Image 1 (cartoon, rainbow, N blue to C red):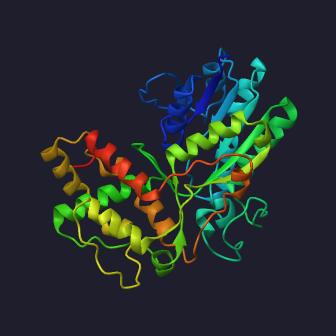
Image 2 (cartoon, helix red, strand yellow):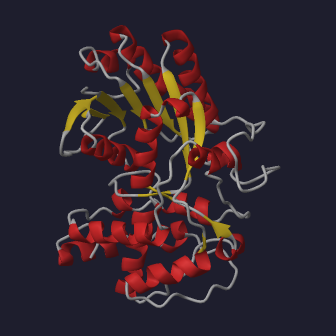
Length: 353
């Protein structure tokens, strides 16, 4: 039986990957974005989720079996994040309600569920790692909680099943994405090679020496589709990571080797990428012109602030996947391979030299 999916945020890292996975599994895929990008097998829908009436009009004729919500909009404060991002979820679920076709809604959030929002990231009393899904919400405002509550409310009202997916930092390709460590590190390494600057780890001693994990976009996509099609996974929240753990003191050298660099010795001090890359826009434009790259705007590729937030955390962060394993999701993705596959893709598509 043919199934139709609506992927909200299809131009982003998670959305683009889940759209591709759905296409590969034979779904009819509708990709909603404010500025959709061309993707094989995906029918684009243009909508601004800040405009409920326009979104309702854009979705008036669609009858999705499943909705995959993979986007968010960064605001200046967490109060505004809550207001804006909860409204975006509500706008989509209200828009598809008249068709009464939706059987499952999947929402992508992340480990800020356990770590807190950017305003209080990694501060205060945090749950013990590895993070488990049954650990409760922090006693602090968090737009992830508001997004979840919109899904729960609509599910109770309209009778669909749901799943919540909490990836760690996502490795994948998306130009213009606000949270994009893989492409940020690729641009940083390219700039270090160009200028002769040391390839310096920007983060904390805890991240350099402690264990961590990450989530490839393809692993996340497989998990989203698995949950939407596995009855035992209905109405549950899940962590989703690659399945391996590593220390950045090891991974940093792996990334350096790929770019032909020697990693700088780590001296234990923070060297934020936002500071290191602040004056690199003209250098990147020069590289892009010389190498015939398709994106000369460094801000469209790199999000140093977000990479700094992840790599600057003062605690070790690892994530338990036991819940998904027990229910049958056994996929695994080595994180260094995920980085290398992304770098190869970026180079093949002339996004990095």
